[in-house]
Length: 416
Ligand code: GDD
Ligand code: MN
Image: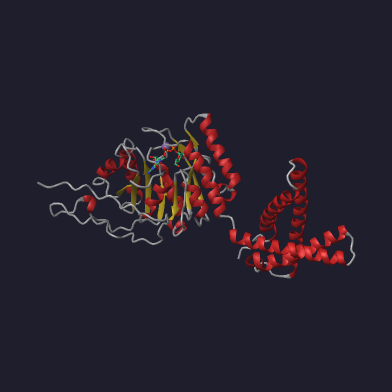
């Protein structure tokens, strides 16, 4: 009497959320055991290289998983037969989604299933699935059929055309949402607007940063240590990946057919945390510290020149202005050489350097006006101690000077 061996589940990766660059996409995907001396269909050797790995993150999708696997298999068997894999990553769903998916494996040889018990969460589920994958192109689709499977081939074609990232968007031609409530539309658009304020360079690159339906080249995100939060995995890919060309395809977000959405207020809080984490991850900390050290040296230059000028009998106001100007030039020279040296080297020549000095000067003078306003506001309106007010003003103006100079004076204009 033969004993039925359920198909083996994928081993759950652990450790950092880093996707390996090269994988042996032709390694035969077999389990050691045979049955009655015959290789079972789902144990047959797959030697066709895997081009595309599509992760389906699931939590309580038992009613949806057979349908989504069938639809996706039909589409991909036609387009890239045997050159793809579907990876269901289930977080130990109470409704046994992982078992239902596992039972489908004999019928769908390209299907692989991962059951996570320790770790939970949508974004990490997707990344763990990608870590265990073999394809050159990675993708993610919801299991609940709200992402139309037929859009997948359009996304695949975008990648074949050369895109690094192909995003299914509700906000381009052919896109939309089914009958969402005004509140949900407002929340979704509100989240996007907030993202544009905190992380314009990331959120602004796509029309639908909230979507969870996209494909990305493995090479663009491999070896990057990802640290997503919550639901929005696309923001993590855009924020940390090396993405040049982005293709967008319109799709209509469908009504859920079974089960219910797992989105709670917690995902909204995690979304904001995620934005801030990426914001500071993209902040040039080392460069800012060099800028602050130079600025600090400027204080001593300012005081020393102010002292010498006063000793020489120069008037108070002229001493203040002249000593401040000497400090600004001191700071420019050090910043141009050290803080932004890597950028200024790419903008050689006296005229370029003089242009940078002028911009730096204007920004620092504007910073002095800003500092005067802040001290007066804190001291006269909010009755803050004058020295504390001065300290707060200096810190604020340092951030201002750094950021505006980074964007204007030492902006990387020429592309090498
Ligand atoms: N493994 C795992 N773990 N999967 C999860 C988890 C989890 O903790 N939470 C949700 N999922 C799976 C669901 O089973 C579903 O397949 C998919 O992630 C989306 O979850 P929903 O609960 O259906 O989210 P939604 O309908 O509100 O969709 C929103 O989020 C999606 C994911 O970012 C929308 O913004 C969609 O555009 C977006 O794709
Ligand atoms: Mn959904």
